[in-house]
Amino acid sequence: MLWPKRSVLRPVSATTCLVPVFPAFRHDTQYLARPHSTNAQGNTAPGIAGKFLAKFQSIGPQKRTQVLDANQLQLLSLTLNKNHLYPGYPPLSFPPSQAANQSASVLATGIPVPPGYHLVYFTPQFLEEHLGPDGTDVSYNPDPPFTRRMWAGGEMIWPRDRGDKRPNLLRAGQIVTETTKLLSAEPKIIKKTGDEMIVVGVEKTFENENGVALIDRRNWVFRKALKASPPGNTPSRQIPPVVNTLNSPGSLIPTTSTNNVYTLSLKQSPVTLFRFSALTFNPHKIHYSVPWAQDVEGHRNIVVHGPLNLISMLNFWRETRNRGDKDPELIIPERIKYRATHPLYADEEYRLVLEDTPESSKIDIYNLEGKVSMNAEIIN
Image (cartoon, rainbow, N blue to C red; front, side):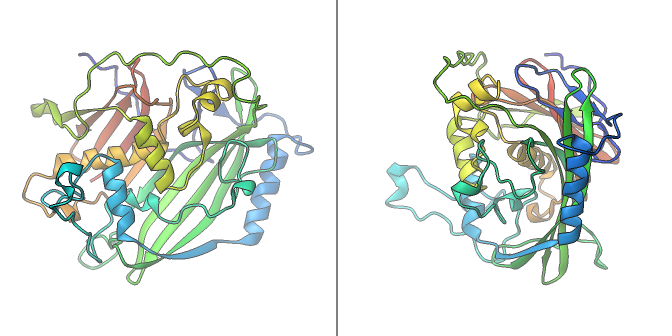
């Protein structure tokens, strides 16, 4: 099978880069440009972005402290259909027919948190009445009408500031402090439609007793809220059938060993999406409500979470490096820069294609139509 030509990865920055969005009923990438209007009054994107930025600059960084519960790591690993947190570790679960005679492994305090798995910690803590109409956490939303959030991209950095140049790992049982600060709020316009929106950049740092262990920068796109009609008023569109038989999750298929290219076929079930939503305490309706995803947001099915795809890319990268000569716990990248361009849907095949270069690894995720839905560059 021939893959589409690799797209060029550009780091996402709310202030310097173009950002793709997912308009309803349209799945070709649309890029945002700076608004030409200087009118900062009323409900325009420049005015609301400026007000939003000033608000959070006056508030300053926000801190939360939490104990990293090993149970979250176990549940996330099972959600990803991985019965071992690291290669060679004891199984985390047994089939029901064996469960009575077996004892599943309990992850020990001090076990390292794999790259990306921190996303199941420091989850939103709000009553349902304080969520947006689409179920999202609104704590970092600009004012209406720019309340429809989409995860656009970002980067994660694992510092090597210590003398031995080894990463300061987050570990189960540690008391960790998360510090969140707003980096930017940039008004943008879609060139083809003229629609306004706001790109928000947020930085989260995670510190344990040894200092900063992780820097997580995220870019969110906020579009104008949709008028939500009650689900069921219009018939939902037919969900397209699954057309290909997939390799089982976790199978690693080298395509060209001499060129250091690997592929991985995945399909996320609605159950997986539900479990991931529960673990991350993310009630965004596009991930579990077919009527909302189709009739309100214009998708053909419920949408795979951007963070779930990010974790899949990091897991895939780690698997290609687990060649027996390294401690799997220490296979940690220096950084990953990633960007989302098209949605992926439940019950549809998609493929991760990883290409190694001397300096880095590049990963593209191709959807059912062969379009790049997400890409990343990982610095080894």
